[in-house]
Amino acid sequence: MGLQAAECSLLTIMSYDRYVAICKPLHYGTLMDSRACATMAAAAWGAGVLNSLLHTANTFSLPLCQGNVVNQFFCEIPQILKLSCSASILRELVPIIFSVCLAFGCFVFIVVSYVQIFMAVLRMPSEQGRHKAFSTCLPHLAVVSLFLITGFFAHLKPPSISSPSMDLMVSFLYAVVPSTLNPIIYSMRNKEIKHALSKVLQYALFLLP
Image (tube, rainbow, N blue to C red):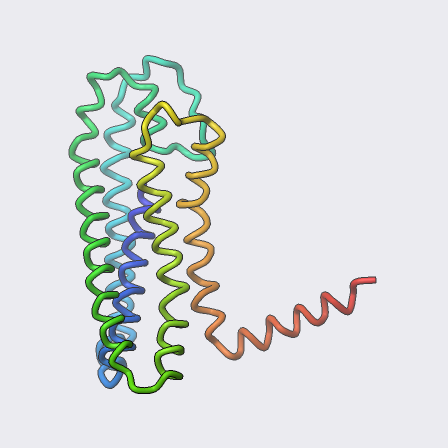
């Protein structure tokens, strides 16, 4: 849960970065300087650490009434709660409320940011400028959608449609894929990285028989 909280916070920071770049381009250097970026990154990881500490402290105190085998590749909170006595789930109430408030706050911030971004983009007179702005935002928006949809589905899906294989697939989608795509999305906008990747691909194709 700590990694998911940090990922949610980082996606929110990335939406703010896109908002500043498109809606306030002249102030980008001031609002997104190295100090501001370090502060926001520290806040994101701080939220993740706090969230993980709350859940860890509570789950370690839960008595397990249904064995100790977790049907996941990591100790996901819903899977641990399935092994616990029903009365003990109340101990997770405070961490769950914290997680929900954090996710809801990030979701609202991202929505508000993108509403203003799209309004600013639609007011651009140049079609090329609109295309460039959309190409900057859409990959990040796709990662946000994947993270939120799979995350909500993993935690709010009815038990009747739950299965071990589906739980594994959904958890992989929201826990691993967004974190992997984030650096790729930003790195591919760097000309040096594009050039290096192109050379690697050309070398790989040359080695193929």
